[in-house]
Each structure stands twice: as structure tokens, then as C-alpha cells.
Image 1 (cartoon, rainbow, N blue to C red):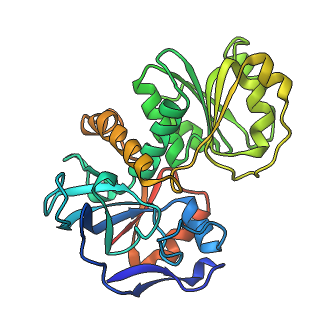
Image 2 (cartoon, helix red, strand yellow):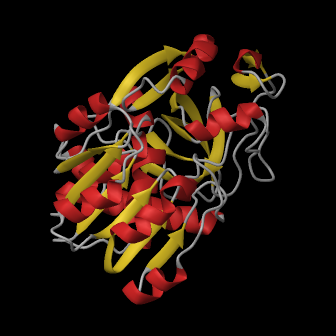
Length: 328
């Protein structure tokens, strides 16, 4: 079978579509999926650079964290799936290939109103967002959510999910055009961070001095101090991304005074049972919204798998709004 392969770590030009060994036949609760489309993520860029290897058991040379396709074979203990079912889901790696062997608990059924390319734009963004703001951040109806990098895949998913739960959403981005586009998805207030100005002061102004209840931070160290200042009493900071760095000064006094909760979370490296729980919550609470058209994937561009280098370069350019997809 063919797979996206990192022939040497470092440069994006080292990516290629290569013939590799056929996938194993499924056993037990395993399911073999013929991949129709796979989403690209910034974690894939880091894997190509050699700075973000997958967990043990996954090839470091074959990237891919989310996929959409059809079931072509099942293990003898599989109860939830049959041949030709349309499925999508998350994996710790190897999704950018013609076939993927995964566990039945990590799959969800694609709503009839989504194509494979649209479906491939969903799992990583929506499962991450739903888990972060509701399960980890305990976001409730009537509260206020601040999303950093709101124009990203996870940011836009969180925006839509929060909107459907009656939450006021404030978003930041370095790109004014992305903020304008996010308003069409229900963004209540937009803050440009392109000039490096103090977003905490703007949060104070927007919320009449109260602050926000939850922050979904996809940026990291550069925003940490202002995040603490932006939170309301008993506010929750959910750290998902570290693109601006891993280390920051921590004002312990402010955390104590406001009785803040700071939560760090990842999805890729979790045990399978935790991923299965997140997938089940996604199935129960998000898929009905997708099927009804109340939330939707945002596909920026679709590339043929043979043009994988161009797809990765486009993702790296930061020009995309929404997801970049590879089709097999």
C-alpha cells in the first residue's frame, strides 16, 4: 500500500508517497479502514522536523492523526462495525496511508451529510476542542470563553461548539482576515494580537472588568501572564498548544487570589481507554450537531496524496483558514 513517508527528518522536501508493507489483518477488536482522506495538523509538521515522534508502536516515518474512510475488514471480537461502514477517528500516527489498523473504540460513524474530505477535517479538531473546553475546562452555558488562535482548526471547532451551548466567545488571532471570517461562525468579539499589544486589557474592557471563565490556549508561554490577568474568579485555563514556548513566569499570588484552575492536556499520547472515552463523548454530543448542520468542518484546501509536499508547505505558510486535507 502507499503511505506518506518521511525519508529523512528535517525538511518538508523529504516527504514522499512510498509503497510500504500491506497492513496486517485485524484481530480481536481491531478494524481495518481504507483511508479516503486524512487531515493535516501542525503536529505532523513537527514530526517531519523530528521534534515530535509518535508514541511507541507507531512508525515515526508515517505521520497522520486523523482520518476518514471505509471499513474493509474486522476482527472476530468487533461488535460495533461492519464492512463498508463510513467511519472517521483519531490515531497516534500512520493515518496518512491507504489503510489503517485501529481499535473499534476509536471510530465514529460519519454523518450522511459529510463527504470523506469534510469528515477528515473533523476528528482531531472537534474531539480536542470538545474534550478541552467541556471535559477539562468545565465550560457551562452562560459563561465566557476566550480562544487563542481562534482561526485554527481546534479554535474554530471550539468556537462553534461553545456557540451551540450558549457561551459568549472572544477570539484572538494575529491575522485580521481570520478574525473577520470567524465572525461568520458566531464569534462575539475579536482581538488582533498582530501588534503584540496587551490583550488582557481588551478582555477587561470587553467583559466590564469581570474577565473570562475559560481560556483555551493554543499558543503557550507568550500568553501565560496575560491569561492569568484575563481570567475571572474561579476561572479555568486549559493549555493545549505550546507554539510560543514551554516556560513562563507564574504569578502564584494571582492564581491563589482568583482561585484559578490551570489544566494541561494532550490527546495524542493518552492511553487508548482515555481516547475511547473522548471519542464516545464526541459521538454522543458532537456528531448530532454535525448531522444537523449546526456545526460544520471548515475545509480550506484538498490536496492529492501525491502532492504531499505542497500540502505540508501550504499548512506551514499559515495561510490556511480551517483544515488542509490529503485525499487517497
